[in-house]
Length: 514
Image 1: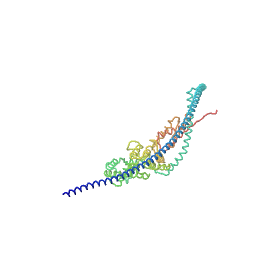
Image 2: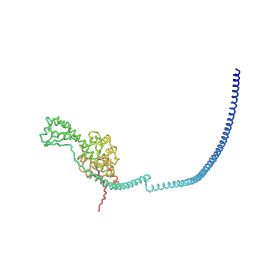
Image 3: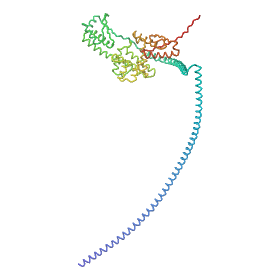
Image 4: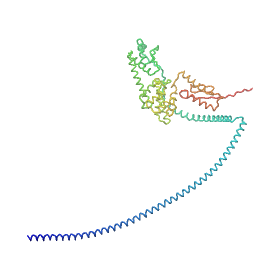
């Protein structure tokens, strides 16, 4: 037991001694490691301090260099600005000196002008005084007042100006005639030569041949039923007289007359003539006429090289085949005008297509002018606008007969082409009454002009010969008077072609030898 206790005590003592020895050893090792760490830390700190001082010195040097550069640049900029400022100051000084010199010069000029103005005023006063004295002397010498003398001078100047104007107008007219007449003759001759047309005079009656006189009775029918039916359906008068083997159809409407003629020819060929058959043939003839009208319109389009017309305009063109104006077929006239207008446009270097189109449509209003109120010009303009024709085409139609002033070359060409077509020999005819009225109106216009003694229309109204009063109209005034008469005729008369005004002034001196 004691041994165990001793062993236990010895163990405990040994353990305590071991622990103390271990602690002392660990303390010694730790102190050694701490000493080396402190040395290392001291070394690192010293190195860091040295590196920091080096960086500091480098930064200071760089800062000094940068400050030196900035200072140098600033000094350079200051020097440049100082130089610019000095230049500006010198320029301002020069401008001030120049302004001072100009001011001095202006002051001198102002003084000189003031002095001259005073001299001018004095001179003006003396001139006014002299003028008044001269006017008084002139009034005393001439026996005329100032107003009378002024009127005399104005009259003299007017006469002189009138003389100069007449001379100038005569020269201009002569030169214009020489130049324009040659060119116009060439263009018109070319157009006429390149476009030849046949003119057929249309009448208001059509004659239908019969195979025999017995057919007249069959056409009349029992108690006149057949003829009444035909007249009622067509609106055409059938004239059955003693003319052998012929019946005359009379109507102002050529379309209705053509329908009646075709229906009657079909009935005669068929031989079955009764009211029901007449109605059938009339309706069939109307359809055929409608087709003919459409075909004629298309033919006119293809013949003139015009495309893109509205179908209704094509039909209206075809209807012109059955319309006449002064004995001239309107469709043939329109085709001719289209060709002539296109030729003239080509000769003048213009596009011929719009000219032909305007020429073809210039009388389109005549296709319906007996069905609609208004002139054929206004109707044609409305139709062209309705079917979306171009403004230049509409204007050419409107300016065709001078209802509006022509503003385009195409309008003028259509007018010229229309006059050329109407002026062809045999193209148109008037009845005697209208012809006489036109000539009387022509002489009336000339006779109502102041200074005219008498006038005579000659050359079928293409020329008017005017004799003036020699004591009222001078040679110079004749030029202006002829122009006035021409303007008056243009404003009041409608005529194809042109009218020549031939003015004559005669002065006679009569004496007797005794």
